[in-house]
Length: 281
Image (tube, rainbow, N blue to C red; front, side):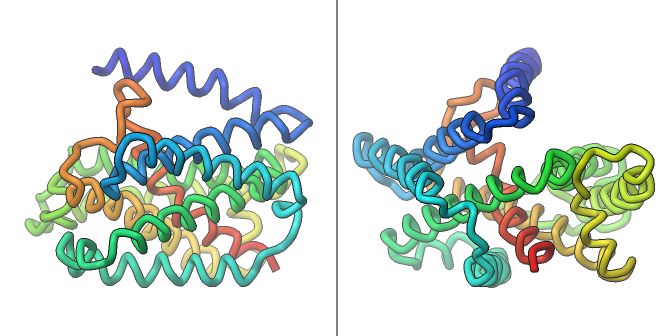
């Protein structure tokens, strides 16, 4: 399993890094639209759609993203979209993490599917706009999400259950602990301050997420980073809830050793629109 994970990760990076670094955004747009289309297919399957309708859902999601980009939609500011989607993520996390699978399954299937499609589309638009703000900004967002996830895993393995016996969300993801989540937050906060201090010494042509948040003062940066880390954890937990409700372990097997695309981007889905909400005026 570990060998599979490593091989898949290397192959993904071999495709992603050139697309991110290319001067022409077309490669990045096409690659990410393909990924969002795959996630749309996985989401339709989690909503109990049959084989061909689920595939059609994924294709339609990818094509709509490409059409939106071609028509200049990603070049426009969408403050109302970030407010609407960001608020929806916060309310959904608060309600579903408290109400569990029963609360989710009470939502009509058509509304569940539509909410997922909107979330995927909004995250994709935010991702393209984040890339347009510079590679430094893009990777600082990725590091926030990946850093929180990796640090939470190792801190959870080392200290999980030692100080707080109650699990973070036992009925949804029994392996997650409060110590892990707090460890992830501490590590990301340290990275944020280090990145901001180091950034002026190594100018990369664009200010990072932490630099932009820090422009509003250190308190605003600390609160914002803590909020984004919390929402990344919420995104991970919510996808676990959706999979449990659907009775599956992974969203698909598209990425050997990793599961599906949704399994890899779940924490990014709420974070990306919220980053745009916090950083774009």
